[in-house]
Length: 347
Ligand code: C2E
Ligand code: CA
Ligand code: CA
Image (tube, rainbow, N blue to C red; front, side, top):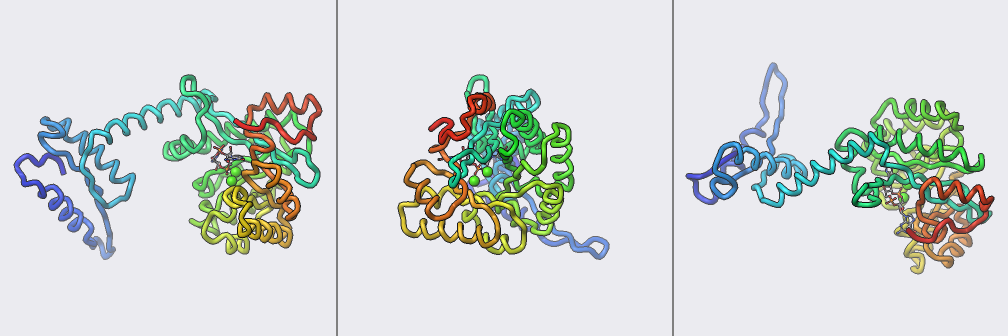
């Protein structure tokens, strides 16, 4: 609804609600019942603008804001919505360019084998090297990349750069990459990943694909198919953030994982007896199901020692090193320092 100059103060709300009610009534066409809904943005005249073009634009902005929160609702326009929208539009343009120009790169965090006190592998974590804003973490841009439909382009860039970097590592050091939940809906995901590995002559047995539980919740059968294609090719699958989701145990029964990663929230609260028991139980579960367990977010020696005592095989965290550029890992290995317990403590 746009423009409400001659109406009383409650009229926009009344009209929007009534429009939504009417529009959501089921329609019958050719014997088929169709249900539609409407999300409405409201702009007021004269406070939001006095010409139709401005009012339409403001109502549009309010409608997108409403859609972002919950479809089928209505919102009034506010000036902050406009600046948020402009910031987001700028971010999208910059991000498209950054992905195309290769400014979104993998940084590598070591995964330590606790029993052997050496590096077992690296997890590739995406970083946007922004020319003025510095290093931007993935939580800021991955959701935008997903909305833009560019998630495969990003994964492909990360995988390519990781394959190139991993050429300089010892042959038994694994590479882990993360995939976004939406990528499990991509029927071609396994084929796309394998095509990149083939191009770089990278052995599938060295690759671990990390998936979070939210990715699986939507459609277990779909996830099982993608997993089977990847695992048949020799690629391993890790269940990331284990324990953070809703129904972890049923997923373990229905899907075949090769690794479990215990969510950092349990690891960081290992001073509590409850967390220790959970970590111990998950380690036992991993052993019983033949899945090595990695503890995430290990920041102190005491926690690493406790994990080792509880039978946890692998650990990752700032104690051993934050994610660093490929060049630092190359230097580390050229110094034959694989047994180093730390790459870089913080960062
Ligand atoms: P994640 O896969 O669970 O990665 C672990 C996160 O914890 C990383 O944050 C890592 O830098 C951070 N971390 C590692 N050790 C410690 C520690 O000892 N203490 C604390 N406080 N944090 C630690 P990061 O790099 O910001 O990544 C956040 C999330 O973004 C990742 O969570 C992953 O889900 C996602 N992500 C990262 N790279 C990619 C990517 O290439 N593709 C997709 N789809 N998602 C990615
Ligand atoms: Ca991960
Ligand atoms: Ca994780």
